Length: 140
Image (cartoon, rainbow, N blue to C red; front, side, top):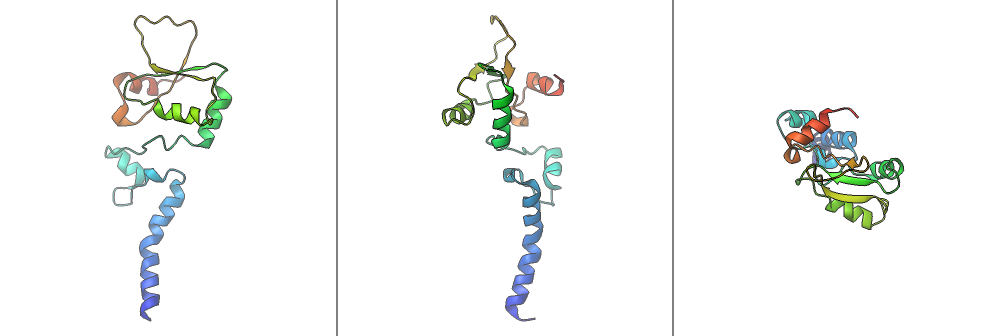
């Protein structure tokens, strides 16, 4: 085999598995973990974060929020570790409806609820608290 063909075959053998993995996890490329750790499932079981920077907050998710949240909906954040700034930026850019009221951290003591609000529940382990883990485990 001539050298250029050998190099091309070797390159294809090395790159093909990673390319197939990227196709499989698209559009969540930031969640890539290779086969040595067992892919995303193996990484999850070993305590690695699977997503960062709201990468799952794609067009489909925004469309669903815009369709399902009622007019003037209040969207609260259940702990100080979830950063609403990204949602505010998305709303400023016009991808999230402007009538959705982005609240701060949910306060349970001293707050009078006159309606049932909505909660943005971010499930990254590094941002989870005992309360948000409980919310995540509950069924609506």
